[in-house]
Image (cartoon, rainbow, N blue to C red; front, top):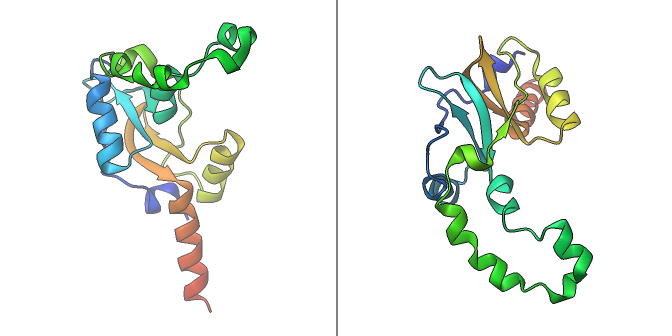
Length: 149
């Protein structure tokens, strides 16, 4: 079974200039944990994940060295407002791994597990054509085996 048979083909994408407030809204309202970042020609430039937004709130190494106990975590949470005014290009992950649509779903799942991804963009000629999640793979395998019982 190939990735193309089970991937989600209606993919919400964002541009590098999208404000993080819009991305955070999409993530919170529609439960997206990550969105592909594309240019005007749908070429994949990176990915923006919840961890990228939250990472800006984490204590720095210097803060940790000085003593975590003295860090006001509630104050750090308040800095989220300043994160929301940033653009996707300020925090996105570049050099994203992808899988091709003709890859076997277990090979794609292996790539995801190896890199600790829950989902991965499906790309053809550098353009995003879908997204694949571990849940998609599991569901496909479940249905295939259930049909054979």
